[in-house]
Image 1 (cartoon, helix red, strand yellow):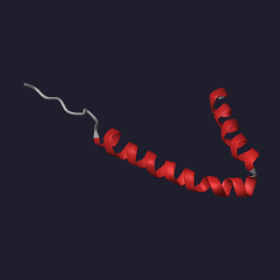
Image 2 (cartoon, rainbow, N blue to C red):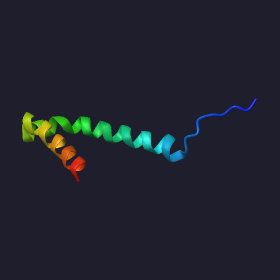
Image 3 (cartoon, rainbow, N blue to C red):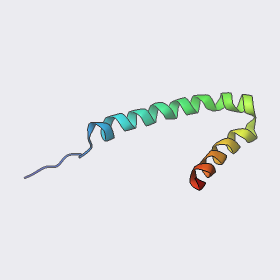
Amino acid sequence: MDQKGNQFSTFAGVFTPSILTILGAIMFLRAGYVVGEAGIFNQFYLPCHRRLECMIL
């Protein structure tokens, strides 16, 4: 019986999920500040605009 466990490396199994969790929490905590400074319209406009730029380029 050859049991195979997860084939994740240290980078894919530990580092990447940890960094994504930390960055997600930071983004969530900063959302209120962005709305307060830029307004509700710009909070949604800026990320959508940046994503569109990245897809075009």
